[in-house]
Each structure stands twice: as C-alpha cells, then as structure tokens.
Image (cartoon, rainbow, N blue to C red; front, side, top):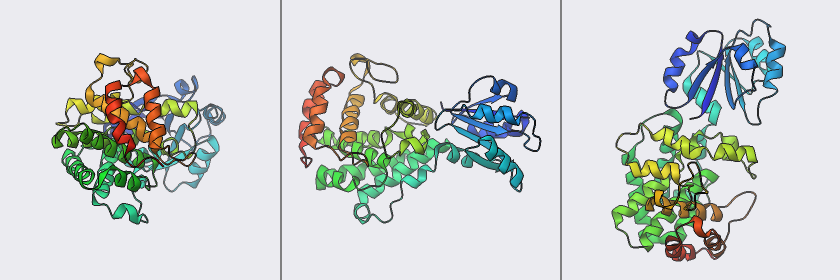
Length: 353
C-alpha cells in the first residue's frame, strides 16, 4: 500500500484524516526528530508550526535529500501567506489548507486522475457509444481506486456488454483505430487491452458470457495505476529506473484498492495483481510460475503486452501487428505458447501498418 508519512506537532490534529484514509494509504505518524534521522520517503505531509523558525535549517536540508518525484506537502492556515512562503522556502512541493480535505490530499499525491478521461474535442471517440461507455467506466474505476469508494460492478458489466457487441459487429480494427486517438496513454492502453482480450475470446470461440468476463478484466486490470502519480503515469518520455520501480507497484496497489469490493470474483483479484507474472517465474510482484498462473491471467498478460506495443506514444510510433506478435514469440517460455499461437489471428486484424 502507498505509504504517507505524517510529521505533526499533535497526532490529534489529524486523527480524523487517518480514519478517512484507512484502506487507501498506509499512514505513518512520525515526530520531527525521528523524521530528520532518516531520508524522506516518497510522500510526506508536514503539519508543523510554521510561525516558529525552530529547526528550519534542519528541515530544509532534510527535504533537500528527498527522492526525485517525492512529495513534500505542508499544511498551512488558509489566510496565512507567511506560512505558505515559509513552506515553499523549506522545499514544499505542495501546500494544503487547514482543515485538510482528504480528497484534495489524494489529488495532490496522485494528480487529478479524472482529467485523463475527458477528451471533448475528439469527435472520433464520441461517434462510438461502446468506446464512450468504456471510457466512462474507466473513469469510475479509477475514481473508486483513488478515493477508496465502492466499485460499480454493474456499470462495468454494462460497458463490457457494449464492448462485446461492438467487436461482434464492427470488429477489432475499428476499435483499435478509435481508441488509439485518446489523448491519455493510460486510457488508450486500458481500452486497447479490453478490445484485444474480447477479440481473443472471440477468436477461440468462447461463450459471450466469457467474453464479457474478459472485457471486465480488461477494464479492471490496471486499476492500480490510479494510485501512481500522474507525473510518472503520463510521462511523455521513457521512465527512469526509479520511476519504473514505482510503476511496477501498480498490481499491488490495484489489489489494495479492491480488497473490500463486495461480490468481486476472486479470479478478478488474481488477474489484477498477477497480470505481469510470467510462466518462467521472472514476472512480478510475486514471481509465480506456470502452475500458479490461471488461464484468465495468461490471456490478459498476452493482451497487455501486445496492447503496450501497438500504442501510440509521444516517444515512438506504434508497432505493426506483425512486429508486436514477433515479440510475443520471442518471449518464449515466459508466455503460454498455445495461447500465443491462438492469438496470431487477433494480431493480424488490421494491424499491418
């Protein structure tokens, strides 16, 4: 779970905040002397008396040691420009006003995830009811993950049904051409994986109910990315090694977000946390091997890898279907070879350019 260290003069001041954040963040209270004894973590909230200048130089030096992309947020009185100025001088990355609003805090931590969904100038997306339904559902999925709210499974099922119908009548090529116009790399990827998973199910002739299950899985698989800071999640260039380590936490973040979701099938939790596992044990986060990885996970993993390869990214053009499929083949024992073979017609559908 994403950890937030809170440095406060009085724990009583933010007890209510901790109750709000249960299940969303791992909140640790640390005294200022304790905090100064070790480097800052990825996220720190300081609720200290900025009217006094005691230990200011120590705090400034300490925050100067924070990791790249780490958050150092200060609580200040709303009407006090002096406190805001002092917080910035100490190295604040954000300033929040008392009394703190937990939604505002989460937005400061991860960014405004809701901003990823909107694309009002994109007429191509608006022409497809199924794509619009999937986008709205992704927005609800990401919002529930950010705020610790209940997942709307009925909405996901409804959107999944629309996606299955779209693939049946208009095919995968139309779906890919449409969703690759979305401005958000995160949404584009989730939509691609959803369409690919449904088309995969159609190719191997599974029932419509099972294709809807694959659609549900595709929309849900990256829910943990809602708890990755937007500066990393939507970075226009390649991630650094440190940023990649943060990104690799999204399967566990996704499981954390869904632990209390009522009525969610266990196979969906398994898929969320394990869709980056490989049959040879080289995946993450648990290093599972073949017998420990379900068929649903194996299918979503193939769709996830292929979808990432054919995405449009600012730093590279999308791969052709043939080139992306060759990479699946080159992964050899990491993937289910029988499923990779069955996936070939899906890779060939309109992706030769």
